[in-house]
Image 1 (tube, one colour):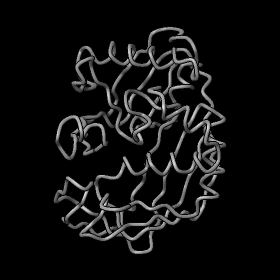
Image 2 (spheres, rainbow, N blue to C red; image 1 turned 90 degrees about the vertical axis):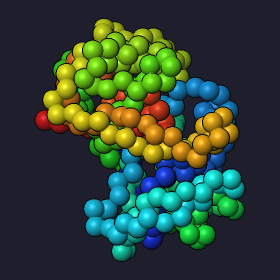
Image 3 (cartoon, one colour; image 1 turned 120 degrees about the vertical axis):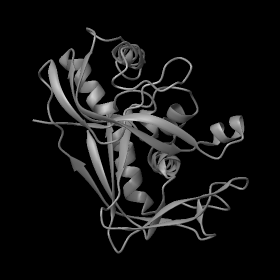
Length: 265
């Protein structure tokens, strides 16, 4: 199941994914606190992915972004002229999407900035949630699907090094990650029915700036640079596995705004 959230705000810093995670947490807390605790008090694979679409017509400025009480950076800030942001969220877990849908309906507004966190030039940003829609999904019945990324696919090896689509080991890492994710009891409870085959059609590398509280505390750095894979590709596998990956996202960090795909053709 997929939903679309229309958000009104006047500006947005390039470092935003961690606050979308907080928005999701806040909405779940409003609707189903026990489920929110289950997802975020345990280090489990998140059964969803998301992508925030920023309007093409925007003004871009380099300004001061206060990430938290300790870190401040100079980076890009997007300004919008009465154009909404569109947040797309996809999930395999019916309880998640219903709880999120209901929570967002109740939430109405969200403080993107709070205290000394996520400020732009010392000013706070607020999200106004205008609409929440349910979207139709494309049924997956074949064992070969052409996908297009909505947000970059992150594939990392066991040392957290990025693996790109043209690396000879990309497919094996993709299979290892997908197999592990599907084995999660709250997702499928068993691994891949058969190995995935990945064929790039029109792919490119994409570097994304991101931040998380744990990362900042562990490294003493304000942001991380994640190297992902964006574009169009062919994925072969069992239709059931392809359907789940279509819904929860492909690769690492899907619950942080990566790996969301759409079906082409």
